[in-house]
Image 1 (cartoon, one colour):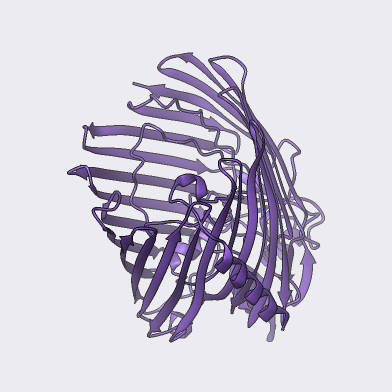
Image 2 (cartoon, one colour):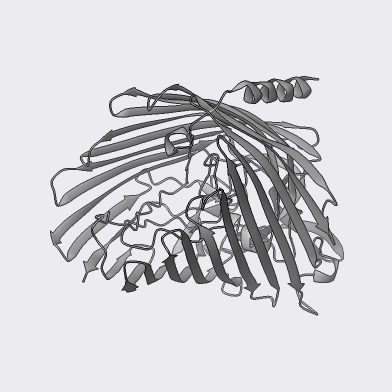
Length: 586
């Protein structure tokens, strides 16, 4: 009854929100980006900004996104570097539309390289190429405080080598339409360097370093996309068509092909807009015939299948607000849920133009969990584990965003989500036979466990201070509280997350950065019992100095507290680490 009351209340709120002019200032966005080791991402202002993306024409909100696995929300694909070594990067000026190269290095045998070139840039079309490499070859210490069998720290070889190339193109056609495409190739080689039960026997025999040379893995991800859309309404019509192909393959001869076709259309009538979104996922699996370590024949969710998603909507725009009423349906053929349906109602109220906005939503979704997605969430998942698709029948949220001072903005929000059959990562167990006795031992890889139905309460606040180009500060705090029927905890997901970042331009040529991240309330499921995980604290500082118009020097110091917390249970992060290097513009 409480859930029904919440759903009814939020729906009523959205229905009476008398609605908004169609402008960017009525779109409420929020973004919580909390990571265990701070990885600043520069805004590539000189690069093609109209990248193809698998999104509907109109985005109601920016989801609360996280750079790591710890969110109860859908994890967005992004560049993940689980070792979390420092990746200091200079801030590029908006006028930098030129060739660019970067080289750097640091402790843990860390290497950084990047090359960017605008192949051509014309008035109506552009093409560019971006190549990035990040690697680390040093040993990571597994802390004795995190693992009872160890009496002192033990080293583990922690290779992580990721190379990514991206070719992008976009062209404007008759000022009203846009054709764009991209091709991405990502090759990631790494070791399973985490703690497992075999290390106990090594430690007891006097070994202080784990030789995990054979525990290697590589991922190859190819991503190709073509998109054709109208920039705005042409007369009364607007449309957006794209097709995307993704290939995932690994060292075990497993491959997965995902073909996504997306079509969005809209018809405008004065203050009304009728829209229709259609998605079709085609998943084609190729499994190895035999494997020494994994039984792919008995692996779940490894069938070829198709998912169809349809979302009709009706949007009304008024002087003081905006309301969108729609539904989302999904049909899975071959595996997964045969049919799902959820509401999609969103409303905003303009309390005071450019000052304060109130927003609320009742929505849901059906997420396709392919390997391309889940391995970016947790790269240490076992190759024969493919999580089931996730169905969220109800996702309620509401909030207010406002400017409380000339340069200070705040976003306060809260929500409740019901998730059907969510998955949680747990350390995978395997049988071990010693002297005829069979025991279950923990491995360095992860499996998943499911909760039949889970509820999660989410609330947060986001503050920002912006003083022209001199000082920028952001602070984000979020709390996640789970209501579970079967599981004791939401394994390895935090209850609390904080993120603070400040950037100060001391002179025209010198800029300093300061960051602090925190995660708390995490628990792991190990050997059939709950284990508390250490709270994660990370303080990082960095600087960027421009010697010449074509040369920058950058440096970054990460994990200044030298903390031995874990990204996943068994996987300690690098302790104090630094990176320094040069950036060239030519």
